[in-house]
Image 1 (cartoon, helix red, strand yellow):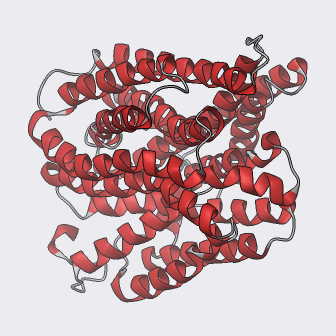
Image 2: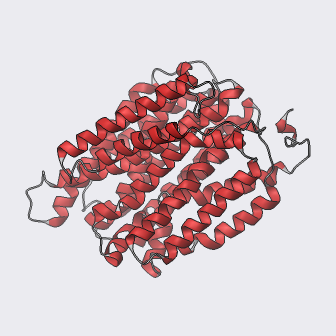
Image 3: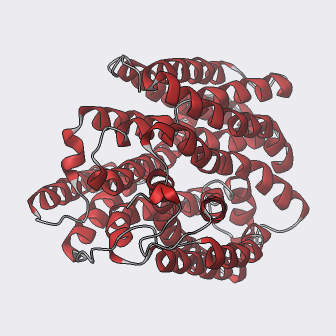
Length: 466
């Protein structure tokens, strides 16, 4: 059956445009929560009387949970009816938003945030899989460009939106905003979503989930405590994390029907693009976290002003993603990746140089250029890898790529905060602003190193057209 002909698995016709809208709007809402709290973290810290290292778990814990859910997503996609799975995920997201909105303390707020992440961990790969499967391969670049508008633009808009809400209302409204939107998306999915994928009812492997949780949880905890905890405990957590991931991979390779088929890594193109995609996402999510905090701490501007500085960059990404998709369909990934990595590597280095006396308009332009560069590759790298897989591995490939990007993002948030804290210790100035500037410069330098590594890797991509 050719699902590009607007027929579901039962042979019934459906409105493909309405289905795409329901998936993209739901995806946009879910992905928006990745950075929606970034400008609100200081306000939450003061309101609930917790320090910044603790409140940061609203971001790192959220990203970790998404990373843990990613390996399960491919299995769920083939186990449950597409429409029922999507609706269930949206209802879980609504529940998490309500809990977070009414949370009287930090523990319950974090619980609501984790529940949100469980939903997002299903919705993100679900969106990518549906988009890939209803378009032929020669149009996937354009299609994933549309998905890229969601995956890249939503977290880019998050800091601006959260800045405006926090400055004018309460941080609770960051979650309150999501409640009516969730209900709207649920109604839209009831009308527009269909069963697109043939279910095979694979078994859920509990041991694989345990290995995944221990592995990725250990890695994140180890990175997040490098600057503030015991060095021995951090190293031990990292070792446990590596062992957990190794056990997960080994088990998947030995299972007849793996939860996550690691044979996708037989494709050299998929392997390389997944690593590059992870590095670019580390840079992307890292900058989304650092820039608003940097502007508020060093430039002493409001959350709203910090968001407005970042808004042109978000708009740049919204414009560039569909264009990048069409360029990918025509020229392939190598040229785009070289240009993209070069642009955001250079601009990241410039962020290391600027200081509190730099005009905000210059920071705005610099950030917009940075976003333009990364928008050339943030979705296209993943699409290039998926296109090199056979159809039976597409869902697993999307899950592996999405998992790798999210785990990389979770590690980036924890690691960069730790690096910024360590960086402040290098400053001997009595000025708090100068001390904070040193910390953020150190973190930006770490992002620049990640970018340089990625730039080196893109030259190993195939030269031929897509």
